[in-house]
Structures are given as C-alpha cells and as structure tokens.
Image (cartoon, rainbow, N blue to C red; front, side, top):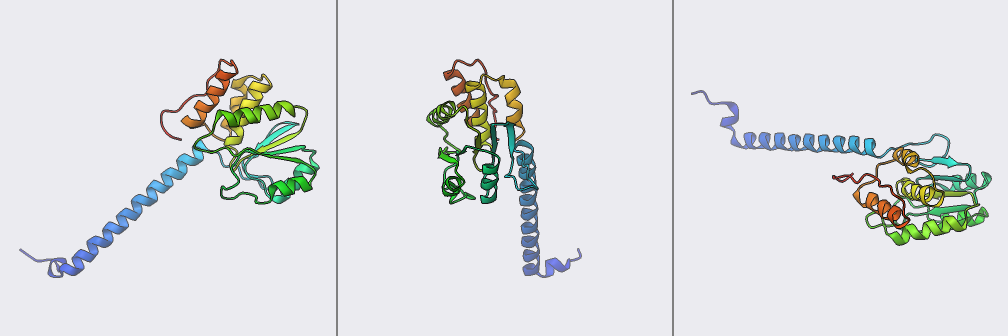
Length: 209
C-alpha cells in the first residue's frame, strides 16, 4: 500500500493536525462571537448619535429624557436646554463613567443625583428612592441616564406609569426601543407595579437576555 508523505514524516503530520485544530477552534470562536454580537444588537439597541448626543438618547416629553453615559459637552448642552436635574443611576465605579460629572453638573447650575443601581442586583429601595425623588421634583426638567440607557429606560417606565398614571402598554414601546428586560429587571419592575397596585406585568423571559 503506498505511503503518503505525511506518513513518512510523523512530526510534520502532528504539527499539521495541530494547526488545523487551532484554525478550527478559531473559526468556532469567531462564529460564536458573531452570533453573540448579532443577538446583542437585536435585543439591545445601539443608537449612536452624530450630533453629540449620548448613546440611546430618548426624549419622552419636554421635561423628561434619558440616555446612556453623557460626555462633558452634553452636560453643557443640557444646561442650555433648561434641564434642572441630572440623575445618574449607574454606580460611579463602572467603566466609561464621566468621572467629574457631579462637578460639571453643579458648574452648569443643575442639580445632580446618583443612585448607584447594581445591574445584577437592583433593589426596590433603588426604585422607591427614584420614584419619591421624581414625585418631589415633578415640575423639574429631568435628564436621567445610566451607562447604556437600559437601567434608565426601566426606571423611566416605572416613573411614567406609577407617578404619572400613563398607559403601560404605550410606555413599554419606548423601553423596547432600547431593550427588553432580562428576568432580573422584569421581576424588579413587576414587583414595583404590584407594590403600587398596578395590574400590569412586563414579560419575564425564560432565557437570559
């Protein structure tokens, strides 16, 4: 039976097989990454802005808006728009944080509030603090943000439904422009609705989002 060149050189054969295994593993990793990115962008909208606005910027009405992390220039823009209060519900330790945000907001003659909501363990205490603050400042023009406007759109929906008595089905549309809450956040929102005697539930996914 004829002997192949690879059979005559076991070291070359082994190296070739190993190289092919590495290439195959790399292809699998790339495929997984592309699939993951595709799923992320389908479930979590990434609305970049070309006019200096932060990522995922949403304007709900003339007195309330939310977005991802702003930069220093946008803080100045908020002041020129007549915003009274800037609320950040992301922990100050997350990546991409505007380190001197509180100072920038104060320098622009606006009020700053940080409620450090843990992405993996948000609490009803966080929700209650935010809802109470929004009620107390009902006449103010407010800009709410977190890192990507996921936390913020969830809290925005709770405020608009619980404090402002708006139709949850209508408000849900705005949140879904950015994301569909995972099980942790859907349960948080549903508990808040229940605590305020609102007969409405956000869909709780069976798989992580």
